[in-house]
Amino acid sequence: MKIILQRVKQAAVKVEGKKVAEIGKGICLLVGVEKGDGEEDAQYLANKIVELRIFPDEQDKMNLSLLDIHGEALAVSQFTLAATLRKGRRPSFDKAEEPQKAKTLFEYFFDLIEKRGIKAKKGVFGALMEVELINDGPVTFILDSKKLNKA
Image (tube, rainbow, N blue to C red):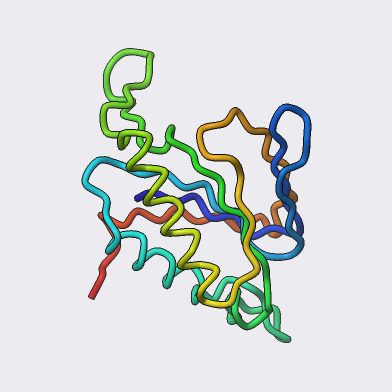
């Protein structure tokens, strides 16, 4: 799984011009599921994300987690994160998981975030979405379950 995590002051998702999800201070997660990803990948990333110390403390150092600040999370499925751009000019999506499997794993990942006590919202899987956010910092991280040390 690949995730783009952005620390936000607020974020929202619209589908067909209608707001379907909105959060305040917290994180916006763009989530891509690749072939071969499974529950272990989702579990690892959900725990990592909830506990990442990326919010400022009293000394303005990144020392607090989403749990510590009682922040919110907005998860948005984004299959384009599985793109390969090595050849030519058109992205290849051969590494992207089949939609139904990807949706199942995305929903599992989302449920794990909620079970950790995070107030979470999500976009509409597979829909054409407009994501609005105010990136706080800016603070942005790329997480790839295949490249992170899961020890």
